[in-house]
Image 1 (spheres, rainbow, N blue to C red):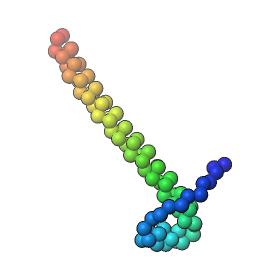
Image 2: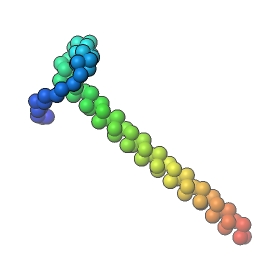
Image 3: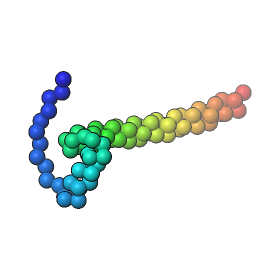
Image 4: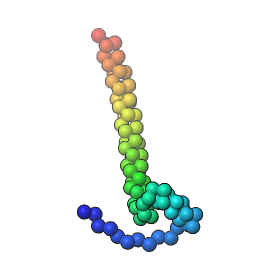
Length: 79
């Protein structure tokens, strides 16, 4: 069971209006909407980290493949 903590924040009035409008549309509380937004932010951050990690791995794999092809060609040329 997750325990909850009470939090007081100060944000612009325009954001409060948007928050209230979205919460009303979804029929959830402000707190629930803020909680969803934070979870979504966390998920997006993890996705970005994974994406950059996979891209780095792909770049490294490409370098290894290119080296293998080059050195493999040299071995074949020696025969």
